[in-house]
Image (tube, rainbow, N blue to C red):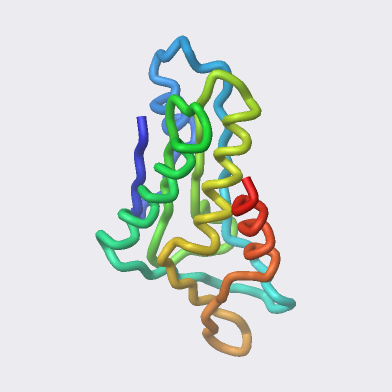
Length: 152
């Protein structure tokens, strides 16, 4: 199972995990990552965030990232749910989940997907701060995390 969704609505983690497992007795590990909106970034308080994307292009880019994870690890399933639109601190913004026979493959694939998503997925983030709105670029640390996958 490979699923990618870009949506404005929130997601329910337990529902998504149950669907990913879906009575598949081969699965020995399910690893998930949930990213949330923080109230601080780069030393400034964040009152809200808005995510923009190009429908169709974004989903295609996410599917390509997930397909690369399937090429690298023996996964049984992978799920990416990424929210768009206006979000507030504490809101869930992204879910990445991977299932495999063993935890090592599931952990590695989940981390790989989120590292690529943070740098290569076509989303544009705008934060509302006390000084006004500002666009958010990828962090140097995100690029460093991505670089380690090039060697593997």
